[in-house]
Image 1: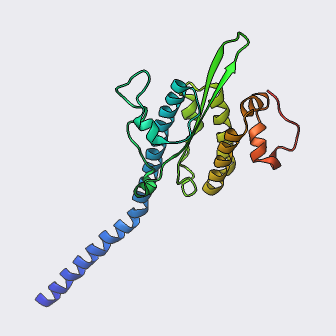
Image 2 (image 1 turned 90 degrees about the vertical axis):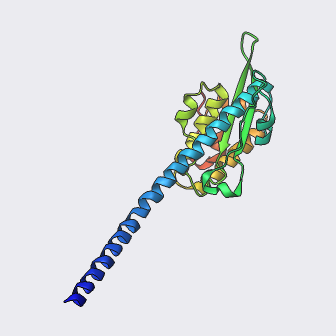
Image 3 (image 1 turned 180 degrees about the vertical axis):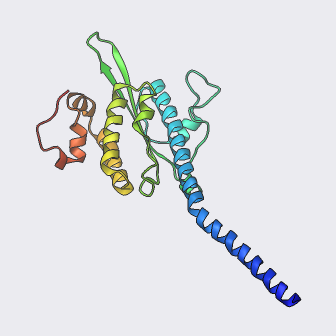
Length: 218
C-alpha cells in the first residue's frame, strides 16, 4: 500500500512539472511578441530623439548634416551652451550589442519668399540600421505632423510614407528605397524646387513603373 502511494505521489509530481512546463512553452510566444513590440517602441523613441537633435542642429548652423551622431553629442547648443544637441548615443535594441549607429541625413534649404525674406527649411531622415529585418522600425507620418515641420520636412514625410506603404513588411526593399531616396537629396541640387513643382518628382525616380502618366503639378 505504501509503495502504491509513493507511486501515485511521483506521478502527481511529474504531472505538475509537465503542466508547468507546458504553460511556459505556450506563454513563450506571447512574451516574445511583447519584447518585439517593446523593441519597436524603444527604437522609434531613439529615432525621435535623434530627429529632434538633428533638426535643432541644422536650424542653428544652417547647413546639411551628414550623419555623425558624435558631432551632435559633443556640440553645445547655440541657445544653451551647457547642454549638447544629443545627450547620449543610443542603438536599436535588436542589435544593441553591435553598436551600429542609426542612419541619419539632414538637408538644409533656404527658400526665398516673394517678400525677399529667406525662409529656413530643414528636412531630417532617421533610419534604423536593422530596418531590413524589422520593417516596423520606421517613424510614421503622425510623428512628423506633430513636430511643426517645415515645407521640406513635409515633402520628405510624404515621400517616406509612400515608400512605407508600398513596401509594407518588406524591410529589405524599404531600406533599399530609403537609401536611394536619401541619395537623391544628396546629389540633386535642384531637388527642393523640383519637388515643390511636382509632388511625384522623387517618387517617380524610385517607382518609375507606378508613374507612367504626365507629372502631377501642385
